Amino acid sequence: RRVIYKRRQKVLFGSLEETMELLKDYNAKTVADIVKGQASEDGSSINVDKVLEKVGQFFPPVGPLITKEDLEGLDQEGVTAFVSVAVEEVFNQKVEELDEKAKASGNEPMSLARSGNYIALITTDNAWSDNLQSLEDLKESVILRKYQNLDPLNEYREEAFTLFQGLEDKIRCNSIFSLWASLTTPQ
Image: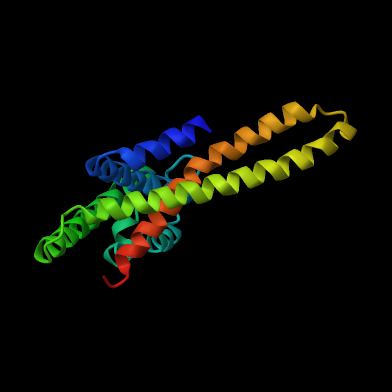
């Protein structure tokens, strides 16, 4: 609980520059996860078609910019680097575009950071709420394990820890998905 509340406070009261850094970090980690999920165990071969599909899903404006030929022959590290650069370039371009629109209309720049703050807060709250519900469901299910001669408390702790580990990835992936979806809709 402390970890999630601390993260929420950081987003809520942090500077817009910190939010931009968080979003860039989320972008990079999401790209790395996409590529890792489509790589062989040793990282030498990549399912390029699936990488392109997932990049198009999470980063729609980037999808059309990367071709199969760009990624073929690269190992996991190479594909990750190539896609990361493309995502970062498009992200920076979107930031500049939105800042120019804001200045032209007399508004403050960093609108993407403010949107990112909002999306990160909503996503964190939703994921935390889902996690709490999962913990309630887990409480009910581990009680039955005492009939299998298992310690319900230990079972709860182990499974609750596993749920929490997935929580951070869920927050990051949902934040990135929502942010980039907002970047592809007409402003």
